[in-house]
Length: 373
Image 1 (cartoon, helix red, strand yellow):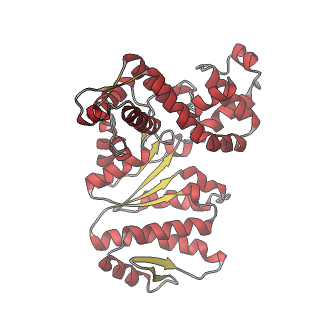
Image 2 (image 1 turned 45 degrees about the vertical axis):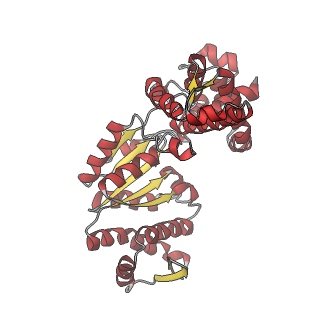
Image 3 (image 1 turned 90 degrees about the vertical axis):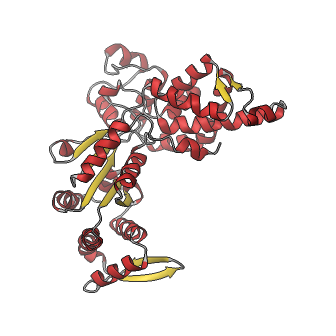
């Protein structure tokens, strides 16, 4: 089994969401997709786009550290999507009145280039944002512009001018649908015409219905205790579940080969049992690999948010504002605590009140508990 087999299962339990997203695209609607990182937001969009035959222009706002960088990502995504000779000729035709050049920079890849002063970047932004609409009309196709980590645009768009123009374009353009991906629903989105789809963690029954036959196909079977531990660790988070499943499978292959049972496992004559300690050992190995990433993440958070995150990982509660909980973990009272909770939710690290204030990334929660114990 390759990791790709697990990756192909990212949409388990999301049938209703994918049908709703397809209907939104049919109706030329725009969408805000919210959920924790790794929960399957991008996979859902790509699956719906493939099912509907829609082109996807993808921009990760987390990588756009400036207006210049944002424009570069947008332009590169356009030429990645419209890359065949006929489409490139259309691009060249449309670009004639503008100070933008389509260059062949490397074999089989074209790139939009420009030489403009910084004060003209706003004009360039408006121009590039109109380009997908032209291509959709000319090719009689539909286009989705996907903005991942949309709120990160504010890290450089301090005045909100670019975000405001994007919101206007969302309302105006036909044939082009906008899908924004974020961790939470903000107030402006609730009062807009955006369709909102929220991806919650999957129920244990859905996860079990996926992982048991997936492992059985390759000759491995969970003991009841191991399956229970697996489900407790991943907490319905499909991204972490896929990573852990692959590590368990890989470790199981190594054990089978070492014990001379590999021929039986490979032939699937008898299942190789996955015990609870195998699951625990695999997740420990994964956490060790991720430790540097988690350490870096913690260093970027204010101490007050780190304290709240550690407390909820070590001692989960759906009432972190309770006086007893604040005293027990020496948290700051009042607005500071509420601000820390809201900020962690905005970053996708914590579920809010509706999610019981649970740490949104299961591996991060596991690492914090191990680190604090």
